[in-house]
Length: 385
Image (cartoon, rainbow, N blue to C red; front, side):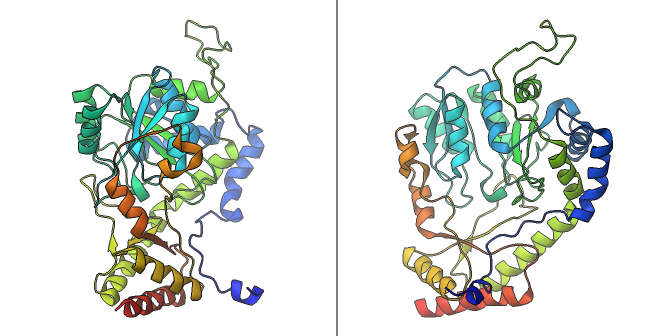
């Protein structure tokens, strides 16, 4: 492929990162304070902003270096027995499973709902009837929020802790006036990017304090604790968010509502146009009982069958439009995970892997780029008859 042809490709994703000029005020404050890590003033300010956004006390949230480490530390903070079985969806990004393994536990892979593409309390209850499950790790698939009241009821009925992997769901997922634990990603591709970063919110007593301590090697920093300050309480790791990343997060937060609105408008417009020209041949992730997707970061379509997806992939390739088969292969089909996981029957997840296709979606998309995507879908649908 020539250099000229490569330059015409429509990318799949383009991050909404703040410009150097937008970052400068926070970077100057950081440099003046001469503190660049270790729970510095910018991290504290970002956590205070999150406290307001989520309407929770500051003691119920903590920032970390990234969401994968956040999942690991939350699982460690739950004090589960080594080798506990953690139920999670087979249809998800590998980090959900690897976090379970690195925390010393065993993933149990479950099916997802055919419409919402998510692990539900009903699916989890059925899994618990079939085998021993020690905790549940549902995923807010593509940012779609979970019904926290339903998961709170599940926790109370079963006694099992539930941790929502809400990596892609900042702005959409909240506690919804329920008890629960949420883990968000602030990666550069997410709706609130800090470059790298994660956020843990939990109403579970003392869980956030444990995660904060574990993120600082497991060292006690509480002078009123029974263990002397500076002593190791538990083996942790270095997972603190840096002041640099907090600066990016603060700058991103300042314009988040504008970008979230643009994302909603763009996704809605593209879906309406695609539905019109395809006569609803393509379908979309259904909204669950957790509410609407308020800050979409992806455009993922479901085709009628494998042949239709292959035809659209080939048409996009010819038109220099990037696509991606999200979350494929499924976790239990990966050689590195097969022998580490237990897997239940996952017919809905298997069907999704044969028909789902990610299309370009980013706030800076031009009218020309949008039209090219519409045109290539039109041609592919016509070719399929």
